[in-house]
Length: 201
Image 1 (cartoon, helix red, strand yellow):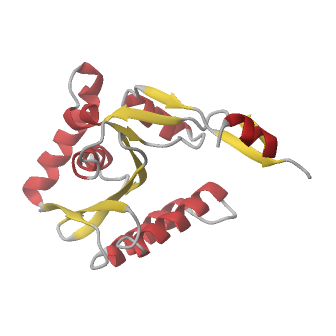
Image 2 (cartoon, rainbow, N blue to C red; image 1 turned 90 degrees about the vertical axis):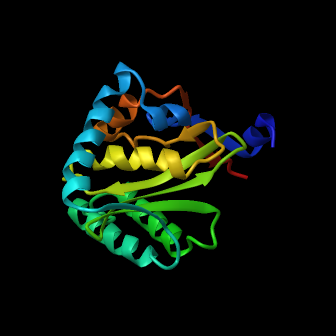
Image 3 (spheres, helix red, strand yellow; image 1 turned 90 degrees about the horizontal axis):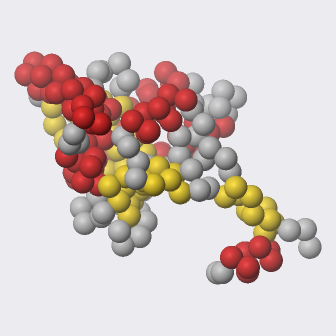
């Protein structure tokens, strides 16, 4: 559908601060240069602390282990009060993540989970958007484990998006800490977000 066809049916308005962050996949894998020094250091700290004392495993998510991810998601959401009263965005994201996990074999998505000493402590889920771009739809990890989010992000780039040039990590949902984190990974582009409102007939 062309833009003039869209505007015939909808009012199109830009959604400020909901732009998607676009990265080069190889940047997120290699983390080269001074601009990624912080991420490399945090990953090094995580691996030094947990790979020596505890066994760290990266595993593909499927119908055989998705229940463990659902349990972890529930724990993650309890800490952040992911319910409609406290924040519609988190509540909607929780439902979308649950649906993706429950239907992981049927949907065109891929995921990985991370065990530390046998317990799930993080997972990520991605999907293909175009021939050259994939989307990191969901990424959850124990925030109390230093370097875990950075380790998960790097593993997702390596394992979930083979053959893609770009990774879309979606918007920051106007959350300051999330915005700071996404900007720190040096996006190569930002894609504007729009709201479509149906014209009254």
